[in-house]
Length: 314
Image (tube, rainbow, N blue to C red; front, side, top):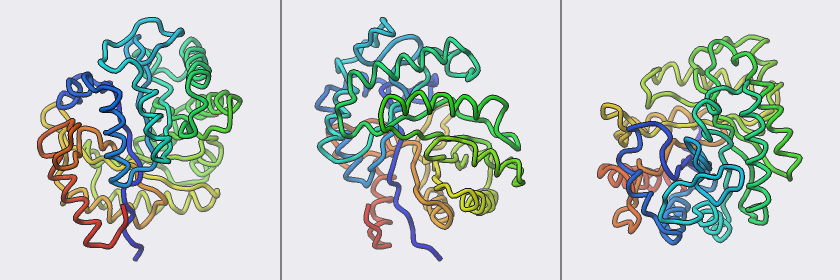
């Protein structure tokens, strides 16, 4: 039996993209100063996170940073939260990946839209020009998440490969994707060939326990078979572990008993566990930058105690 892997990466957002889901932290992060964002990144790094994926740099036609490509701005307390988190990441020696999507709702959902493709490319160029000197700027997260139904949807792999190629022309950047629907995969030669053809550096499959679309037994079988496929094509296997549950339409922290079982299953098969997401779902006790539901403190405490009991370094 393999040892337990810690959660070593997380998504985060300046304002959550879906209505209602981020209700327990959106109003708080809206008011974060530059120093607050630096403290939050530091808190997450102290919990063992070394890989940070920013879900979006712009949302609903408004940018979170001073952009010339998207003129409208979100009214945030922090003038440039991207600069703030990159500055913290530089100091902490962790890696940041910028989300290339969510700029407008249609552009997020349609990976075949040519106008959306141009916008992604323009934003990527602008981000490199503004922030490329930060050593923590490691690459890109492509947030048009593939909904696997047996196989990757038509057009998805060309979208990933084209955008990955555009991004790599801007510098030595890595690309991460996080598909859902792994429970439906047809584990045959066609799917193996698809994984081989995808030019993303890392694929972090969503475990879908948080959205209640699968079971522990299915997750175990799915990731066991994904391990075989990824070994066959020589690619690392990552997991996107969901640490939330739903309270109506709102995301709240899952009980640790459930998260522990997810960790135990995924640790047997994957190379790295990311979570969706620390922000809102976990908070260090007494954190001066608490953001999220009150039970997020208990999830943090239970998780850190568990790592200590198992002699796992965060």
